[in-house]
Length: 193
Ligand SMILES: [Zn+2]
Image (tube, rainbow, N blue to C red; front, side, top):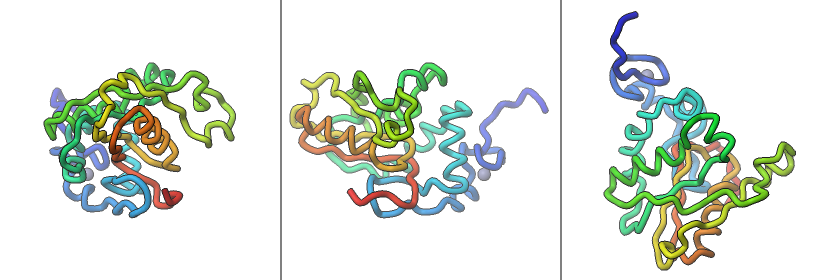
Protein backbone atom coordinates (compact mmCIF):
# COMPACT_ATOMS: atom_id res chain seq x y z
CA UNK A 1 0.00 0.00 0.00
CA UNK A 2 1.26 3.46 -0.76
CA UNK A 3 0.37 6.84 -2.12
CA UNK A 4 0.34 5.64 -5.68
CA UNK A 5 -3.19 5.81 -7.03
CA UNK A 6 -2.32 5.24 -10.67
CA UNK A 7 -4.42 3.44 -13.22
CA UNK A 8 -4.96 -0.25 -12.82
CA UNK A 9 -7.04 -2.82 -14.69
CA UNK A 10 -10.60 -2.85 -13.29
CA UNK A 11 -10.78 -6.60 -13.83
CA UNK A 12 -7.46 -8.00 -12.52
CA UNK A 13 -5.84 -4.92 -10.90
CA UNK A 14 -2.70 -5.11 -13.09
CA UNK A 15 -0.98 -1.74 -13.21
CA UNK A 16 -1.46 0.13 -16.48
CA UNK A 17 -4.55 0.68 -18.60
CA UNK A 18 -8.15 0.83 -17.32
CA UNK A 19 -8.50 -2.64 -18.82
CA UNK A 20 -5.25 -4.55 -19.43
CA UNK A 21 -4.52 -6.20 -22.75
CA UNK A 22 -4.90 -9.70 -21.31
CA UNK A 23 -8.36 -9.02 -19.83
CA UNK A 24 -9.40 -7.19 -23.01
CA UNK A 25 -8.43 -10.22 -25.07
CA UNK A 26 -10.46 -12.48 -22.76
CA UNK A 27 -13.74 -10.67 -23.57
CA UNK A 28 -16.38 -12.65 -25.41
CA UNK A 29 -17.54 -11.12 -28.70
CA UNK A 30 -21.05 -9.61 -28.72
CA UNK A 31 -23.78 -11.40 -30.62
CA UNK A 32 -24.97 -10.04 -33.94
CA UNK A 33 -28.57 -9.46 -32.73
CA UNK A 34 -29.57 -5.97 -31.62
CA UNK A 35 -27.45 -2.84 -31.08
CA UNK A 36 -23.75 -2.60 -31.81
CA UNK A 37 -21.61 -3.46 -28.79
CA UNK A 38 -17.98 -3.97 -27.84
CA UNK A 39 -18.32 -7.29 -26.07
CA UNK A 40 -20.70 -9.79 -24.49
CA UNK A 41 -22.04 -9.19 -20.98
CA UNK A 42 -20.18 -12.20 -19.60
CA UNK A 43 -17.04 -12.77 -17.52
CA UNK A 44 -14.69 -9.78 -17.64
CA UNK A 45 -17.37 -7.94 -19.64
CA UNK A 46 -19.63 -7.97 -16.58
CA UNK A 47 -16.73 -6.83 -14.39
CA UNK A 48 -16.05 -3.84 -16.63
CA UNK A 49 -19.69 -2.71 -16.66
CA UNK A 50 -19.93 -3.21 -12.87
CA UNK A 51 -16.75 -1.20 -12.31
CA UNK A 52 -18.18 1.73 -14.24
CA UNK A 53 -21.69 1.46 -12.85
CA UNK A 54 -21.27 0.45 -9.22
CA UNK A 55 -17.64 1.16 -8.36
CA UNK A 56 -17.53 4.61 -9.91
CA UNK A 57 -14.55 3.90 -12.19
CA UNK A 58 -15.32 6.89 -14.37
CA UNK A 59 -12.06 6.78 -16.30
CA UNK A 60 -13.43 3.69 -18.00
CA UNK A 61 -15.57 6.05 -20.06
CA UNK A 62 -12.70 7.74 -21.95
CA UNK A 63 -10.94 4.36 -22.17
CA UNK A 64 -13.98 2.67 -23.76
CA UNK A 65 -14.58 5.66 -26.04
CA UNK A 66 -11.64 4.52 -28.19
CA UNK A 67 -13.05 1.11 -29.11
CA UNK A 68 -16.61 2.52 -29.28
CA UNK A 69 -15.40 5.09 -31.83
CA UNK A 70 -14.43 2.26 -34.17
CA UNK A 71 -18.09 1.08 -34.20
CA UNK A 72 -19.45 4.57 -34.82
CA UNK A 73 -20.85 5.43 -38.25
CA UNK A 74 -19.84 8.63 -40.05
CA UNK A 75 -22.05 11.68 -40.47
CA UNK A 76 -23.58 11.81 -36.99
CA UNK A 77 -25.33 15.02 -35.93
CA UNK A 78 -25.12 14.27 -32.24
CA UNK A 79 -24.43 11.64 -29.63
CA UNK A 80 -26.90 11.13 -26.81
CA UNK A 81 -27.64 8.52 -24.16
CA UNK A 82 -30.48 6.55 -22.62
CA UNK A 83 -30.75 8.30 -19.24
CA UNK A 84 -30.79 6.16 -16.14
CA UNK A 85 -33.59 6.71 -13.61
CA UNK A 86 -33.27 9.77 -11.38
CA UNK A 87 -33.17 7.54 -8.30
CA UNK A 88 -30.18 5.62 -9.62
CA UNK A 89 -28.50 8.74 -10.85
CA UNK A 90 -28.70 10.42 -7.48
CA UNK A 91 -27.61 7.26 -5.66
CA UNK A 92 -24.49 6.97 -7.83
CA UNK A 93 -23.85 10.65 -8.37
CA UNK A 94 -23.53 10.19 -12.12
CA UNK A 95 -25.17 8.57 -15.11
CA UNK A 96 -22.83 6.00 -16.61
CA UNK A 97 -24.55 6.18 -20.02
CA UNK A 98 -24.02 9.94 -20.08
CA UNK A 99 -20.33 9.53 -19.18
CA UNK A 100 -19.90 7.11 -22.08
CA UNK A 101 -21.80 9.30 -24.55
CA UNK A 102 -19.85 12.43 -23.60
CA UNK A 103 -16.49 10.63 -23.80
CA UNK A 104 -17.35 9.09 -27.16
CA UNK A 105 -18.65 12.39 -28.58
CA UNK A 106 -15.44 14.12 -27.55
CA UNK A 107 -13.41 11.35 -29.14
CA UNK A 108 -15.16 11.55 -32.51
CA UNK A 109 -15.68 15.33 -32.51
CA UNK A 110 -19.49 15.31 -32.53
CA UNK A 111 -21.66 17.23 -30.02
CA UNK A 112 -23.01 15.33 -27.02
CA UNK A 113 -26.54 16.40 -26.25
CA UNK A 114 -29.14 15.41 -23.69
CA UNK A 115 -32.07 14.41 -25.91
CA UNK A 116 -34.12 12.04 -23.74
CA UNK A 117 -35.74 12.14 -20.32
CA UNK A 118 -37.57 9.47 -18.39
CA UNK A 119 -41.28 9.87 -19.02
CA UNK A 120 -43.61 10.67 -16.10
CA UNK A 121 -44.92 7.37 -14.78
CA UNK A 122 -41.89 5.57 -16.13
CA UNK A 123 -42.52 1.90 -15.20
CA UNK A 124 -38.97 1.37 -13.93
CA UNK A 125 -39.57 3.76 -11.07
CA UNK A 126 -42.15 1.27 -9.77
CA UNK A 127 -41.25 -1.99 -8.11
CA UNK A 128 -43.46 -4.35 -10.06
CA UNK A 129 -41.39 -6.95 -11.86
CA UNK A 130 -43.75 -7.12 -14.82
CA UNK A 131 -43.67 -3.33 -15.15
CA UNK A 132 -39.87 -3.28 -15.06
CA UNK A 133 -39.78 -5.98 -17.70
CA UNK A 134 -41.58 -3.62 -20.11
CA UNK A 135 -38.57 -1.32 -19.90
CA UNK A 136 -38.35 2.42 -19.44
CA UNK A 137 -40.38 5.03 -21.27
CA UNK A 138 -38.78 8.20 -22.57
CA UNK A 139 -39.77 11.60 -23.86
CA UNK A 140 -37.65 13.67 -26.24
CA UNK A 141 -36.15 16.90 -24.94
CA UNK A 142 -34.79 19.66 -27.16
CA UNK A 143 -36.82 18.44 -30.16
CA UNK A 144 -35.68 21.30 -32.41
CA UNK A 145 -32.30 19.59 -32.56
CA UNK A 146 -33.87 16.37 -33.76
CA UNK A 147 -35.16 17.55 -37.12
CA UNK A 148 -33.28 15.60 -39.77
CA UNK A 149 -30.62 14.57 -37.30
CA UNK A 150 -28.60 11.38 -37.46
CA UNK A 151 -28.40 10.43 -33.80
CA UNK A 152 -26.33 7.89 -31.92
CA UNK A 153 -27.78 6.66 -28.60
CA UNK A 154 -25.32 5.12 -26.15
CA UNK A 155 -25.97 2.89 -23.16
CA UNK A 156 -23.72 0.85 -20.90
CA UNK A 157 -25.35 -2.55 -21.23
CA UNK A 158 -28.13 -4.05 -23.29
CA UNK A 159 -30.12 -6.83 -21.67
CA UNK A 160 -33.54 -7.13 -23.33
CA UNK A 161 -32.91 -4.34 -25.84
CA UNK A 162 -36.10 -2.60 -24.66
CA UNK A 163 -34.34 0.52 -23.36
CA UNK A 164 -32.47 1.40 -26.53
CA UNK A 165 -35.44 0.47 -28.69
CA UNK A 166 -37.68 2.80 -26.67
CA UNK A 167 -35.09 5.56 -27.04
CA UNK A 168 -34.83 4.97 -30.78
CA UNK A 169 -38.58 5.14 -31.36
CA UNK A 170 -38.97 8.37 -29.36
CA UNK A 171 -36.13 10.10 -31.21
CA UNK A 172 -37.53 9.08 -34.60
CA UNK A 173 -40.95 10.43 -33.56
CA UNK A 174 -39.21 13.66 -32.52
CA UNK A 175 -37.92 14.11 -36.07
CA UNK A 176 -34.56 12.34 -36.19
CA UNK A 177 -33.91 10.89 -39.64
CA UNK A 178 -31.76 8.04 -38.42
CA UNK A 179 -31.09 6.64 -34.96
CA UNK A 180 -28.23 4.24 -34.31
CA UNK A 181 -27.96 2.46 -30.97
CA UNK A 182 -24.79 1.27 -29.30
CA UNK A 183 -23.72 -0.21 -25.98
CA UNK A 184 -20.55 -1.31 -24.28
CA UNK A 185 -21.84 -4.81 -23.53
CA UNK A 186 -24.85 -6.91 -24.40
CA UNK A 187 -26.35 -10.17 -23.27
CA UNK A 188 -25.91 -13.15 -25.55
CA UNK A 189 -29.58 -13.68 -26.29
CA UNK A 190 -31.50 -10.65 -27.49
CA UNK A 191 -34.91 -10.63 -29.08
CA UNK A 192 -34.56 -9.98 -32.81
CA UNK A 193 -35.32 -6.31 -33.54
ZN1 LIG B 1 -6.60 -7.13 -16.40
